[in-house]
Structures are given as C-alpha cells and as structure tokens.
Length: 69
Image 1 (cartoon, rainbow, N blue to C red):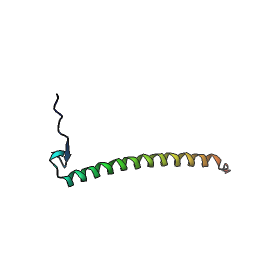
Image 2 (image 1 turned 45 degrees about the horizontal axis):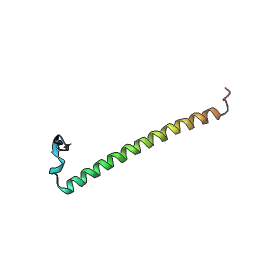
Image 3 (image 1 turned 120 degrees about the vertical axis):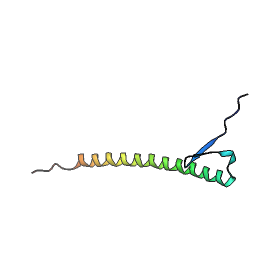
Image 4 (image 1 turned 180 degrees about the vertical axis):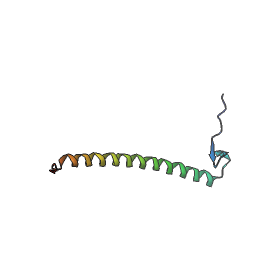
C-alpha cells in the first residue's frame, strides 16, 4: 500500500505539514482558502459585468442618431 504524502502548505517561503498546525491555524488556513475561492468567484462576476457593460455601450452607440457636421 502506497503511503500518502503529508499535505503541506507554504507560507512566506516556509513549508509546513498541515497536520502539524494547531487547530486554530488549520481553521485560519481554511478561511484563507474559502476567501481565495470567493475572490476568484467575484473576479469572474466582475469579468461578466464588464463584458455586459461593453455590449450595452456598443448597443447604445448603435442606437444613437448619426451626428451631422
């Protein structure tokens, strides 16, 4: 049976075994991971909104009367 490699995390250039961290430290690590996922989700939502805004601006431009000089 293959031995599982210990899960590690690198913080400020130092590597730590997650199993060696205190319960509070593991909770903070989980909080960081959840927060990173939420930031990624929000960045995706922002990209969608920016794309929609560009499309709306283009549609508005197409609807504007032509300027005469």
